[in-house]
Length: 139
Image (cartoon, rainbow, N blue to C red; front, side):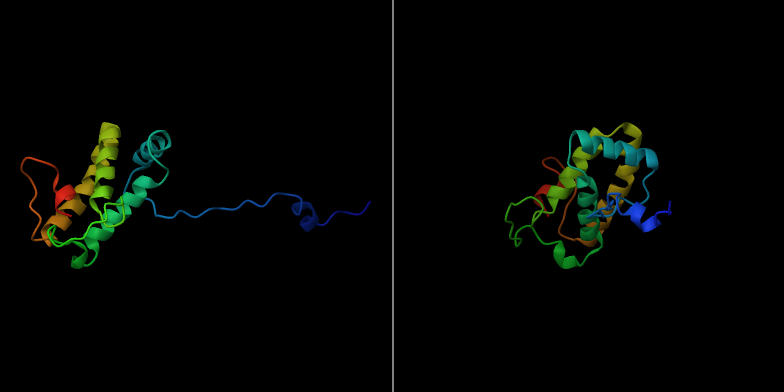
């Protein structure tokens, strides 16, 4: 009996497609923190929603200064994630409160570094004091 060609054998197997992530995973997170984050996203949030929020917050911190506008002249459409950049910071804050302590501390270091960069670049934002967080009213 003749031998079957390898391509004929492989032709019957289903093709496995690897989907690419829309947003890159968060850099400098440990494996345990990433696992805690994935576990939390499976139970309470959408998959990769935290990576998307972190990516947008990082883009705001490192992007052009015209993205950080004065709250008086800013036109906000109130659609989450469209013009309201504070939406992404709200999501990161919710994740920080929902993660275990060690993982939250690790992610908070990265988020607070971006916060500091945004606050040093924007002269009109005043952080601290009573009331809502600075990213809700002043971004």
